[in-house]
Image 1 (cartoon, rainbow, N blue to C red):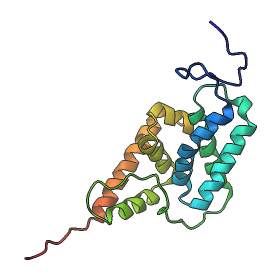
Image 2 (tube, helix red, strand yellow):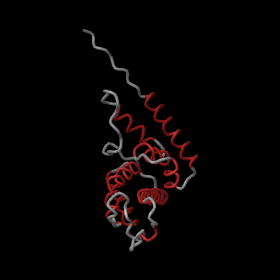
Image 3 (cartoon, one colour):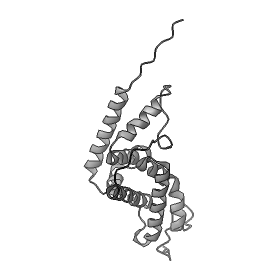
Image 4 (cartoon, rainbow, N blue to C red):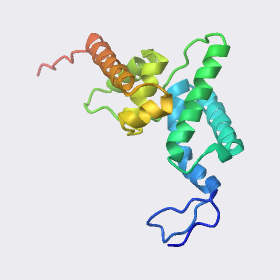
Length: 183
């Protein structure tokens, strides 16, 4: 077995053993990190700032990454940056989430459902919204989300359950019954 001569440059399996640089892997993660930053901040400008801060911190601290899961490591950096900023700044008025591209298209033909869903997600507490976005949108397992957010796996499950229940209740509250046309 040959060893990778450069331990800071991981070798991706199945890719003909071609080494990928840290920068190339971070570049490949940008779309996912951008979605996650938008879900955390609910603002286009703030999400871009958070994304930039996250990438900068990851690049500066790349020696701390030990070649495990770069996506989880970067999401944890982003989560910590976001919650640290929220603690240090005064609470700002909520910004619309309309520009966020993280929500799936509504499954029904109701044109107002997407807007109601966006408002319901926006109304969630930040910790519940972070768990919901990581599990539902990004597809992380509970264990991975617990590692990213630095919380127990049971807390991930309970926050996700409460977030889903809050969304169901909010969507049920604002249910608009379509009227039939008489012919």
